[in-house]
Length: 308
Image (cartoon, rainbow, N blue to C red; front, side, top):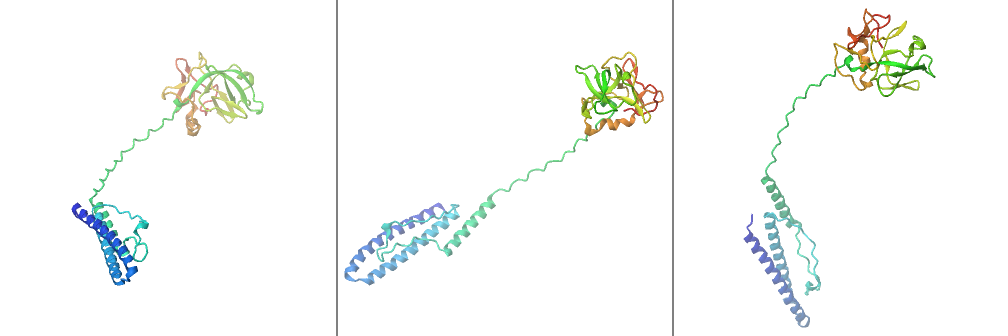
């Protein structure tokens, strides 16, 4: 790589060459005036050749400076040069050509730039490889508990009942389950339980089903019944119960969902194991439905029967 001292000397030589060129142009102006009167064409031709030789030498010096700068990492930007009117060549009344770098001259410039870029790239430190993140073992998915404790079953009282206006098999019941608001529950019991036996009746209701419309009326729960193809019976709470008492199954403790997600089909999954036993007691997997301190939930007559 060239030193700064060499660069400085080359620049001084270029400046000197420019001054000599200006001086020669002045002499050419003087000689041309003399030639016009004396016809001294030989001297004029001699000065023209010296001028061309000097221009070539100036171009070579500038090329050396350019190459030296490239080796020292100076990026070259070639700008167009506008020649002022004062630099007209007086020998042939033409504007002198702007010193330029030919294709053969630019080849070493481009090679030097390429070499400089390669050397700079070699000097760069390689990027340190980032340590790979260890794949931590995922925690095993917690299996969702699905048992009877997910159901919110409570004692409620039917305080009002009527037939559905658009369905002959459905009752529309107003049910008090101990909340501020009376719930509306639609049940398909018209063919199984007379209307007068529905009024003011205590029963067990599932209270956390997602409300759903039944023939245009929103039903907000389900009355729990033992059922078979021939007969349907409403489950009977034990004596002494009050509105809002919760039904639990001792072998399956837990808090019920606020509302069952119908997509998870919790009730549909549990239903096959919800039955009355031989003693007509409502059970889940053989464990009885109870109301703490008051007794078990039963069916009037149906034993070993599906509850729904």
